[in-house]
Length: 196
Image (tube, rainbow, N blue to C red; front, side, top):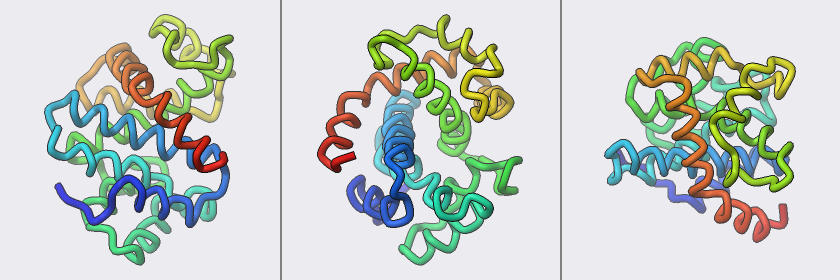
């Protein structure tokens, strides 16, 4: 799968509609995780495409939260994004704010890891290290079961995401932690370079 975007141009487009450092961090994190998953699942040739879809998945969320996954179509079309990118971006909100169903394995991964990276990010902030490097699945499962912790992260979506992939919840957690470990240092450097 091909796209006209690369990492830098996708980030530039994300930043056109998102100013909050958290939203930039989230886009970069999901993008890097998607790239890791592509390599892990045998889609090495499509790693850049997977990353772009991850970076851009919440393009409309900050400015148009009530139209999330709907306004994205207009913004991405205006930027010349390919139909495959638009479909992937819209599919991550399936059942919540979009009726576009995740079909390709990449879209199912995006659906599953989007919400989970948020939960992991919240768990990491509570750790003395403030790093995902020493976060274990056992600890994450405890946070997952505590409905008051990071209450905005839908456990239902995370569970549904694992089911769509045919993975156990534990497998999804383990893989997503590994994906986030693989990119933590690079993302921190990139945020520093952006002054965020």
